[in-house]
Amino acid sequence: MRKIAAVLALLVALAAFPATSHAVFVEFFGQDLGLGEYTPQLNHPLADAAQTSFLSNLTGVGTESFESYVAGTGGPLGISFPGAGTATLGGNGSVAYVPAGTTNNFGRYATSGTKYWESSDLFSIDFSTAISAFGFYGVDIGDFNGQLTLTATDGVTHSYTIPNSTNIEGGSVLYYGFYDTEIAYTRIEFGNTAPGVDYFAFDDFTIGTLEQVTPEVPEPASMLLLGVVLGAGALFARKRKNS
Ligand SMILES: [Ca+2]
Ligand SMILES: [Ca+2]
Image (cartoon, rainbow, N blue to C red; front, side, top):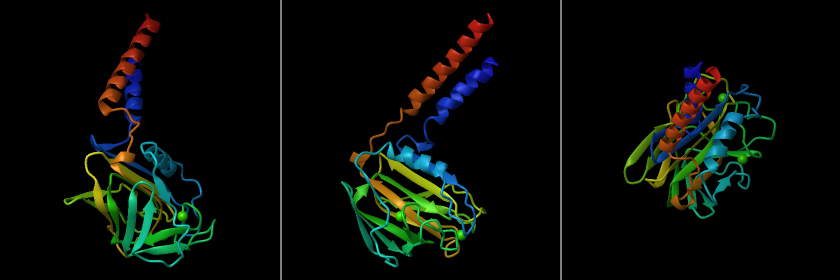
């Protein structure tokens, strides 16, 4: 029992900070499974929790909902963000409209209002100011086995695979975001391992500059220390109780 309590305390401490691939690059991800091609998933707590966690590390950023754009508008689409310049969407994609409470009959719909950016592959975002944080909702990815990839550029190229589930029902909702306090990016390209087949809806995206990244999570080292302290405390408490 003592060991279990200690391990549990350590696991709680480890779970309290998000997955990181290195100290300055922090990712946020959550996905809620879909209800099929014709029914929007109105409850997506895992995706929402990822967005909340992502935004809690940012200050003064804006989120683009696509509601002010005319359906059918394609790229290049320039979108201004407070304090972070302009993000220009290009490549394969356009603004789509789907009435609230429905889908486009293929599992896609907005996560805010009635509009979103619909794409399958080779869709890119260029930033007028290099950005250090980026997050978005993605709907209906993975039902045709597509895995989303991001290629971020800052002179050199960094590729990330978004850990979305594949071979799932249509209409799933995911949120993915990252901040990077070491590298600022001027361009992000979206890829898809099932291009032209696995379309998705892109909505409510946020960008932030380095100045807008204000991490609230404790350093992993201190969290680990906290875990050890908690674990030791649990062991000590057990020992006292048992003795
Ligand atoms: Ca929207
Ligand atoms: Ca679908």
